[in-house]
Amino acid sequence: MTDPSDPDLAPPARRRLGPTQLDEALTALPGWHGGPEQITCEVRARSFPAAIELVAAVAAVAETLDHHPDIDIRWRTVRLVLSTHSSGGVTETDVVAARAFSGVIAESGAVPT
Image (cartoon, rainbow, N blue to C red; front, side, top):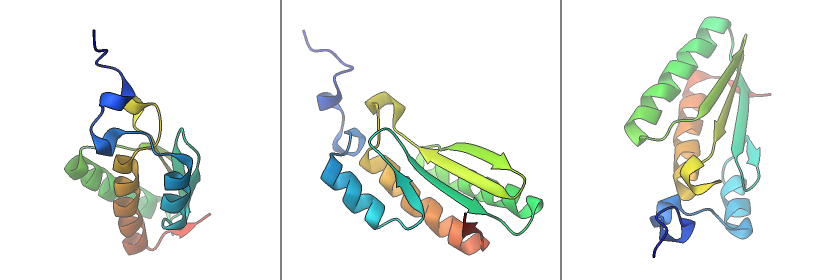
């Protein structure tokens, strides 16, 4: 019987990236780093209210994408972590989200830590 949790049955965007794919993706995503389990971006906003505004903007994009990062806020520092939990690691869906969140970060004026 087919196991519905088998990662090979996931749609292409939800399949874990291989090492080469992940390296290529991270090279194209300045400020993001990580490994096969998750990718992370940490930025510093100009103020605490600006950090909260950044999180709200990321949340709006995440809702549109239907893919939500783990978010940690420490005063002006915002940390985003992406992983496709159902696939057990980083997928193309995470890369698409990271690209979109990078645009939001750039618009906000936040800088990498």
